[in-house]
Image 1 (tube, one colour):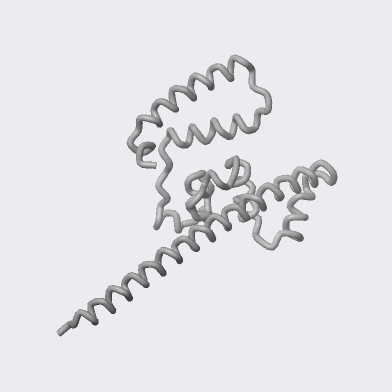
Image 2 (cartoon, helix red, strand yellow):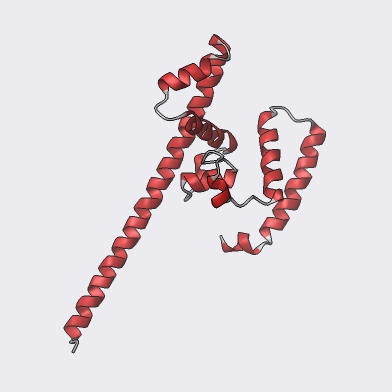
Amino acid sequence: MNTSSDIQNAAAQINRLHREVRRLCAESREKLDGALAAAWHAGRLLAEQKQTLRRNAGRGSWLVWLDASFAGGRSTAYRYMRLALETPAPETLHGLSLRQAYFRLGIATEPKTAAQQIHPVQALPESVVLAQKLLRLLRRRQKLSEGCLGDLATLYRQLRAIFEHSPVAQDR
């Protein structure tokens, strides 16, 4: 038979464990954000180094330098660079793991093999793919004509109205 002392001890232990879960989850989120920020910064530096090497030593020098100097593999370097080039700041992906960020940006995390037939990756909706292509195009172009900016401003207002009234945006 449980006494009130046993019940209080159980409640205290449950609450202690609950606090531990919350603390560990907060630490985990911080570690994920730290890993994402480190990958993003490494991607920026890798992209800068690639441009510098190509400019100063020619096109073939990049892969030679990468193989000799980077502790990770080529695919990791290219994922880091895409993460950095397709994301304005690591904070925009707050709370995501690297794998989740890669998936959200459409960056492959595994080589294309027969394993994909066993565990096929769900394709992103066409609207997301098109939006990513638009973002990449806009990031590559430094100067946009006034007409183009006007069209984009109109599109931005329309999208903003849709997002502000969507249930997903209201949950955040």
